[in-house]
Image 1 (cartoon, rainbow, N blue to C red):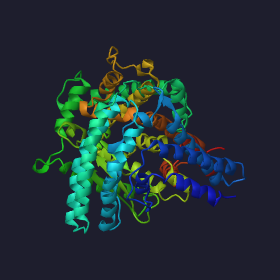
Image 2 (tube, rainbow, N blue to C red):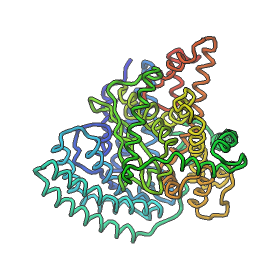
Image 3 (tube, rainbow, N blue to C red):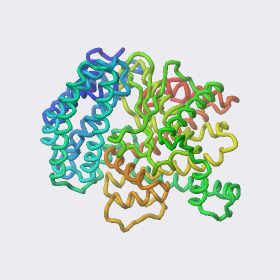
Image 4 (tube, helix red, strand yellow):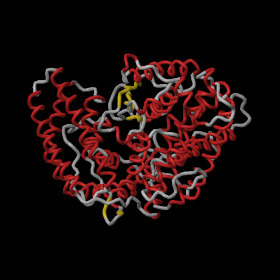
Length: 568
């Protein structure tokens, strides 16, 4: 028995209330509005979520088919997660009362209309103009919601809002180049928006703030549980310690092997070897242009796709594409090196991802001939882009709405070494593996810092790595640990910590997902131990994983059992 159309329609309507989400999902309805930041809208959204939840509670009691029963559980999980995020309190206030979000609310949708929407330019520019005209009403509604914001988040939004001016310049230039009939109106709206946002920054800077970041253990446990991760905090902490110890051992073996190859003593430090590799494999900037790094990524994308298709490693949809772009200034505070916006699942036609790459002179060391293949593999093919472009074509409405970060990041991080194992980088395999493992240390640190940021328990930072234990500021202590295990430059460290502080439970999803997907793959291999063709089983694993759609890994195991690849 299938899920009722009424329940599915209510679910879709609820998760498309926000116009920025409609742009991201490819739902072409009322795209000229800004998100409503008011407390009134938040109360209405909570009431609506509870009503939709009641519908799915009733659905779950019916005799549903396998996929529909799974979707009913997934729908309840996502609704519960939203309700929890909207209602839990720390410092005596809700999260939204402490979260200035003008830069993201205004810039996110505008940028997607500019870069990720395939509609005719005139239609998109009309929506852009309406959004700019709405900024003057948006600002007082947001200020009316804010109550003693978190100091770090206020600084982040200040930087994002100041970065919007470059986006506004681009939008005005776009309107002129397209000979948009409303260009003068757009220019007036831009000026009014800039004035309103200048006033907003004055008010934001005048607000009292707090540095109290932590949620406390009970709320933190619920956050993780509602991400679909059923692991205790002690298990997650032990996972981080073990992972970092395993990586340290592997890195030491590679250091000993590679140091003499590059003219260093066998006892040269890992940092000294990394410095030599960064210099030797630095990307050449054509004409001194940072944008030429994007061109290097584009060449890697073509090479990767050819490698994958030649070996038939994964089912790659014919109608998929990626757009590589430089991270805009208003997003740079929370995108440390690269990120991906997944394909719009409700838009017909090509499933296109946007891949942001954060470029600056300081961050050039993050983009080398050794690291670019790993970044392209992680964000593009065969990992995030392939998985999410495949998931965007799922017949399940619920799964097309879902974000399951343990699944997505577990898939991407577990298989970062997969193409290296298959010889993708040839003679540079060891060098790329060393760089990749050093960067992958971030996912062990993310567990420790995420748990610490959520709970306030500094014991979670103890993962067998020396760091500044005396630092009273939680960001300084966390940054010291992150630098110790990754060697990241200060700019990337700060952007990473900004992101960790806002996306509770997401940072730890990388390693948790990594271990759970690896466990799933090993269990499938054990269940088919008598089969001689390991590559054929890999292909079958990849096909089922990609076809399943978005869901936490603990639900994904049931799909593999249903498909006969695991014992029920």
